[in-house]
Amino acid sequence: MSTLPESPTLELVGASFGHGGHRVVGPVDLVVPRGQSLAITGPNGSGKTTLVTGLLGLSDHLGGQLLFRGRPLHELTDRSRIGYVPQHHTVADRIHATVGEVVLAGRVAALPWWRHPGRADRERVREAVEAVGLGDRIGHNIAQLSGGQRRRALIARAFVNEPDLVILDEPTAGVDVSNQALLADVLRGLVDRGYTLVTITHELGPLRPALDRVVTLEAGRIAHDEEGLRHG
Ligand SMILES: Nc1ncnc2c1ncn2[C@@H]1O[C@H](COP(=O)(O)OP(=O)(O)OP(=O)(O)O)[C@@H](O)[C@H]1O
Image (cartoon, rainbow, N blue to C red; front, top):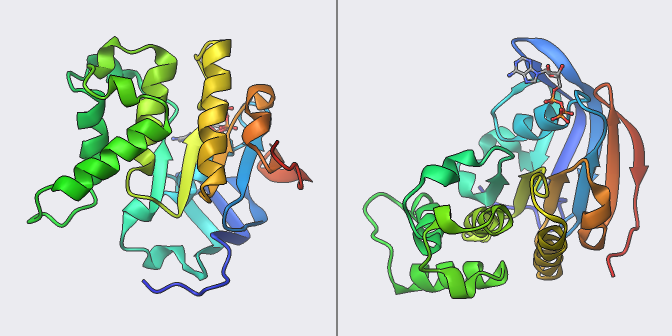
């Protein structure tokens, strides 16, 4: 899929999403420029998760246009261009794999089936693990990490393919206050490297330093759009 040079990362035009044919979100108009860190907030049930999972093809897209880097999203064949850190990560409790292996698995998923991961892939894994502050834990079993560290390992996995967009669902949920601040630092570092982030959150406070913009959903519609929050 070729890219139009000046296109925003994401553009929703009159977009609606739902479940089983029933509309939960929309119509919504939203443009996310490249390099922006956008938070989506709003009350329980306002449709935050439905909206972002709609971008991933995990809830129903019921109408309107979805453009990714200037092209219809449905033309996107390389799914690794969009990274995703889901809210429910309890599966990590039972995984017997090291941080490095979990992140490498994210890398391998984007390789053609015939290509074994090589030195460049392992180097990329190391960079991603270091970017989330877990460089000294790369060989540790993920099940032995704290909730906040585990979350950062999953963030590294989402970023290991240098995606054009990363979607995070409630990254601070279940993470203690000091680890929330660390997580915000990590996200801020990724934004400073030019990544585009869409983060669902109930807790704007700890994430503020990592955000440029906050969109509030109410009953499936955009009720507020606060831009120009220069991180710093
Ligand atoms: N898989 C599903 N099937 C049917 N309805 C669903 C499904 N997932 C969510 N819903 C409904 O869609 C509505 C919006 O839910 P959604 O999870 O998108 O909201 P949210 O803003 O992310 O909420 P929360 O903050 O509680 O996570 C709710 O009424 C919910 O019951």
